[in-house]
Structures are given as C-alpha cells and as structure tokens.
Picture (tube, one colour):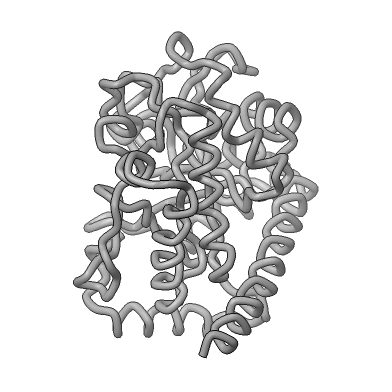
Length: 312
C-alpha cells in the first residue's frame, strides 16, 4: 500500500523473501494498486516513477502511446518482484460527480469502446513484462453517487448495461487475467431478498460475470476492510458468503493498526468446509483457476526474461 514500503531495496527483499517462502514452484500473487494518478501506491520514494491518471492518458495520446507508458510502469513493477497490478480501471465515466472514479480521473472515459481499447493497452504492456492484471470494479462503479470505501453503495438506479461492454470486449479478446468485483449493490441481478453487494452475490459473480459474459478466469474481491463490507457483515459471514458466491480470491488488506490474521482466517474457512457451509467442490473450483493462472504467469515471466536478454 505504500506506507509499509520504505525503499526500492526493501521492496525487492520483501518480494524475494515471499517467493522463497513457498514450498512449491507456484509463486504467490504479489499485488499493488498502481493505476497512475492519485491511485499509485509506489512512487519515487520506493524506486518507481510517477505516472499519469487514466483520464490524462486517454486525453493526451493514442492507445499505442498509452501502451508505451504502461510498458515502463509494468517493467518497474517486475523489476521489484511484483507480479500483479490491480488495474486497469474499466469503469465508465458516467456520473461526472462520482467521487471515487470519475472526479479523481481514474476512468478512461464514457465510451465503452474507448475504455476497452485503453484498458487493453494497459493489459498488454503488463503481460509482456510478466505482470498479471485485474480489471475493476465489476459490474461498474462509474455511475455511482457514493464511495464503497465509506459505506453501502446502491447502483440499481444509475447503472446501465453499457458498463459491461468493456468486460465483454476484453473477455472476447482473451485479455482478462482477473476481474475484481466491487462492493456495489445492483438490485436487478440480486438472487436473495437482502441488499448484498456484488462481492457476496451469486447472481453477479456466477450469473452475470461468468455465465452471461463468459469469463472463466480468477475473480478477486475488492478489499474486505472497506466500510461497505466491514460495517454490515462479520468477517466469518462475509468470507463464507463471498466464496459461495463464486469468488476465487478474497482481498483483505493489513493497514496501519489493523492487520489480518492468516491463521484465524484459515480456521474460519476450514471450519466452514468441515461443517458443510463451503463444499470441497467449491474450493477445488477456485484452486484450479488459481493454479491455471499461476502457470500462465510462469510462462509469461519466462518470455519476458528472454525478451529482456534479447534487448541487451
């Protein structure tokens, strides 16, 4: 997140230690929010450059020019041992007063085709450097009137199906590694009588994303320490419901004075499996998706190393 990284040398040692701790050949996902603009966790202090926001890049140049910018960004991440960037943002700039996506310049624009084109440049640049990406925030945060970091967000009346188009285009072009689901309530796809956000909704994850759009890759949640989840659900309830909704990876950040306890979380999930609240088949489904993506990552990293050698 940036506050816990003091220098380039420290970051490289941290990522190397994390990779060395594994007992098999499958590297851990080591991710960061490195969009550019206001959302860039690592900068000059940590040995990486500052980059423009998505809005600035889309206004100032072509997708090919954007690709060159993102090549530099991705190479910097790879050089520091990071292998997953939580981007690109594929939310549409629909509500000009949107406080979390549009006003901070995190969207490439209001045109679904344009957003998909620039997002594709972001993804391609990272892939060529052996870095995975996670398109976000499904099913769309650009029309919302409020911020899911701060509380419950209902997009039922503001959301439109055009917000799905960038995902559909990227799925059809085989570009998506991961999709990050946002804590956004969208009533028309709800499968329960409650007001569960998309991260806890089988109708959104399995119904809309997997069945309707055809995405079969890894689905990751937005941070479960965000108020949209933390203020309304217990940790145990939210984890179990997220897994049963079809998510493969749950993001839970350890921020200042509030770090996650891996042993506690593992115990919650193990107990849920032992008592039948989560099926073994559901666990295996996610395991298979994660392993498949990690093997793809290994191949990409190998190709990136060969390309770097050829450049020298």
